[in-house]
Amino acid sequence: MHRRILAPGALAAASVLLAIPASAASYSPGAPGIGDPYYPAYGNGGYDVSHYDLRLKYQPATDELEGTATLLARTTQDLSRFNLDFLLDVSEVRVNGVKASFATSGEHELEITPKTPLAKGSAVTVVVRYSGVPSSEQAYGFTSWHRTPDGGVGANEPESAWWWFPSNDHPLDKATYDVSVLVPDGSQAISNGTLQSTSSRLGWTRYNWRSNKPQATYLATLAVGKFDITTGTTESGIPVINAYSKDLGDNDGAARASVERTGEIADWLSGYFGPYPYNALGGYVPNTDTGYALETQTRPFYSPRQFANGSNVSVVVHELAHQWYGDLVSVAGWKDIWINEGFARYAQWLWSEHEGEGTAQELADYVYAAHPADDAFWTVEPGDPGPENQFDIAVYDRGALALQALRNEIGDAAFFAVLKGWPEKYAYGNASVADFQKYADEVSGQSLSAVFDTWLFQPSKPAAPAARGASIAKGVVAPPVQPRSWKKIAATNDVHER
Image 1 (spheres, rainbow, N blue to C red):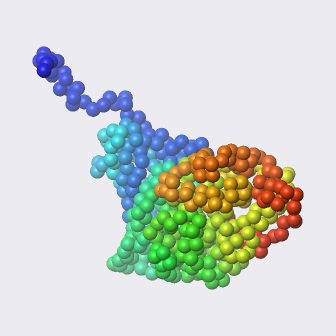
Image 2 (cartoon, helix red, strand yellow):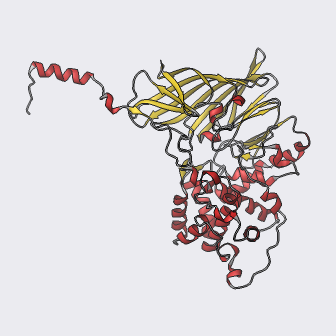
């Protein structure tokens, strides 16, 4: 063995070096966006959140919200500063128990500078105290908070968290949630997951909700108002909680006739997509004046307008299909929206087939024939529609046509193996359109680039045989007949309003 003997001066210098942390030059601010080209300012860089604990107090009469958000995260770089996406007024921020300085920038950025820089790979606890009136806040000229006659609702896509909790707001950073909400007696608070407990004291009631599986921030929801709440279980034993505003008026019966079938539909969808992936299920219908529905995880949001013309089971099928396609497997980037909407629309077509109201092939034929070659419908590319067309009808309908084309190309056995295997392969994670094509290639044993390119990435009307069946290729072409369910399905979009 050899020992290296240091001179006294060298030993002292070494001791000083050991006491100094990594060079300050190695620490830098986290990016103010996670890197999504559609929404460059959405999400943030430098850390990953594993859990949100939200302790809230909401006053329905004035729309005033107070909150303390505790975020458990881990750094992915040496951080001198990091951002959260948020709009309400912040009174205090603590990082690892120590007060941190903070400032706002841009449309929705909360910049946090911890007293001590954070080394890469560190566990971090961030506490944010805040308050405000969500309905008074706008970003980019819109709001995602819905004021109702008896409260308020947070539900929108691709953003809604900013109005009620600070977050890393992008599907790439999924986390678990505890949402505890204090509301006046007589009001209820609805959120995702399981209702852990309720307690009342001094005229207020606290509702404690828990989501124990990874959940994207836009899929977190909060609704406060006066609800009629129903409970039950699916045949597979999943607890179901549904909630209906008490002032839905003429839409009440149709809403219940649709949403109360949630358990039945989830069990049916599991035959196509695999076991239901969560321990809670349900839906809620608040008295909002918006028109869309949204796949908020485990408990979809439905606008009363979805039921204005009668029961609309198809929209329930759509939002529940998203629990696999969109929630369980979330987009890698917002350009991958076809993974959500094309599949949820196709689930509606499968339900139509199940109900004897038109097969998926008949619906594909009808959609194809309904749009002439010069229709702008065909200029939207579902595989990368651009932010301006992210929720265009073509993403839904041409997106479903792409799946019928795939089904015809690889046959039913391979097609339904793909539908069921995909959610299992990427469960609780994220994936892209390119990932889906690669997976379909593997399962089918075919190169499917031509099918995907034709139906997802070309700004023109494809040749008919790809989506309209082998009979057309043989020259046997019958005029498309409008399936009985088509008008109902065509009106069922979770297209989000600004």
